[in-house]
Structure formats: C-alpha cells, structure tokens
Length: 251
Image (tube, rainbow, N blue to C red):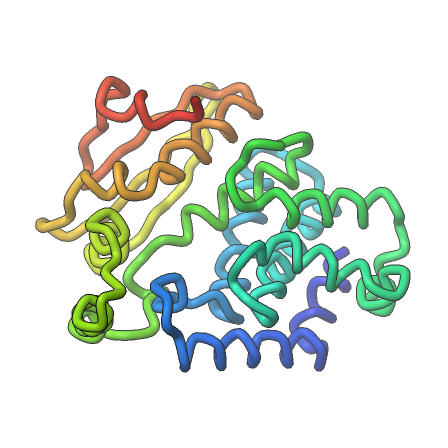
C-alpha cells in the first residue's frame, strides 16, 4: 500500500484534480475556499491519518491505506464544494474503479474501505472502521492558520464585500473563519485510555470557535468513542471542561 501512496503523489490525474481545486479557490465566492482543499491539505490529512493509525497500533498496510484515503478524500472539490465527499466517491468509482486499479489497488475489500471512509469524512456519523476514524479525525483537525490561502486582512475584506452586496454571512461563519488565523496548530495524541486534541492558539483566540464549528467537538468525540478512549480537549495549555461543550455533541 505504500507503493500506491507514492504513485498517487506522482499521478497526472490526481495532480490535475489538485490544480482544478486551486483554480476554484482562486475565483472563490464562498468562505470554504479561503482555506486550502488542494494538495497541501491532502498531504497534511494523509500524514495526520497515518500518525493516528500508528498511535493506535494498526499495521503498516492499514496505515498506508489511511494515507491514500487522505490524499484522495477531497478530489470531489475539483467539481464543486457541495457534497464533495460523495463526488469524490463517484469520481474514484468510475469505469470499475479504473483510477484506483491503475494505481495498484486490486483488493476489493480495501477499495470498499477506502471509499466508505471518503464518503463519510464530513461528519463522523458513520464510523465503521479505523480508516473511517483516522480520515475524518485527520481532516477535521487540519485547522490552522498555515492552511489559509489569503491573509487575515483579505478574509475580512471578503466578508465586508459580501455584506456590501447584500450577501451577508451570519456571525458564526465569520467567527469560525477569522479564528482560524488564531490557530497555530492542532495536534492529536492517543494515550492508553484517552484521545487528546490540543489547540495551540494566539492570545486572542475565542472559544466561541467551538460554537461556530461544532465538528471540532463532535468528530474527535465520536472517534474517541469508536477507539474506546475518553476525549480530552486542551486549548492554549488548559483543559476545557466537558460541561462547556457537551451541548455541542451530536443530538
């Protein structure tokens, strides 16, 4: 599976998809494209997914399968942002999975696992496999200022321009996006009984970020439950009591 991972990185079709995603971002009219969904994000998610798999003691073949899922999870963004996870599955399933098989993926079970993980990476409601867990956690913890494609000033202008045209975004969307500029990094560590997510942030980071983007809580909580660990959230070196975010969990 490591060989498949390396082939993806050099594959012309994959590189073309990444370029199309970058082009969407260049002409963006919606806030999701202010941050990278292309090659940089794909590689970051792949590396985060593999790190998680190793931390929970999975074998190297499954580690690299999670990495391949990370590289491929967002290819649907080459078509459009809406339902991109389902579009990713459709693109990878075309012509009897020819793209995947040309990379050397011939194990039908691993193809099924890969596509299930990609199709469910939006919200962690359908975790059936460690690859599902690794991918969705890696994707939702790749939240940091280094992923932003424009400066904070440009992002503020983006929202101001939309407001001026009568296309006002609600305050939670703005709060989520603008707080990403306050996040240095998000790190995941797995200990014997716990799954710990650490946000390294600037002094003016607001915990309202969690209200604006509840997946920051829902996804790692669901993954922790799947791997039978407790969930612990640490922001700027301090543990956040569960009472402060329990209301954000899946209903």
